[in-house]
Amino acid sequence: MAADDYTPTPETARLFSRYKRARELEKQLLAEVKAAAPAELHAGATAAQLAGLTGLSDEVFRRIARAEGVERRREPTVGKLRPDA
Image (cartoon, rainbow, N blue to C red):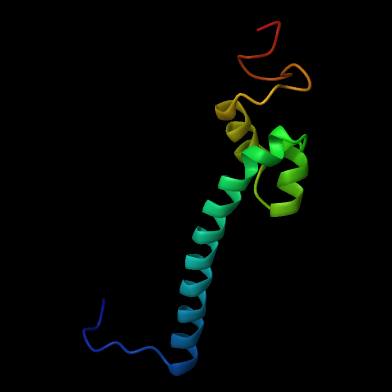
């Protein structure tokens, strides 16, 4: 049951505040990374390389590459786009 007079301890309030700032920064940086990715993909970076540099998944960069029309280096090996599907 929630209490109307809840107040976190100062330590917990600092922790929650730090986390909120980190999430806000992550959202800002994610937008910047997604804006920079197309140029890097067109310059020859692979989705796996960008994923390794950012900690995001390969699929994030594969989707950007498809949306930007970046030429594939190899045929897909899984999913409906593979040649024998």
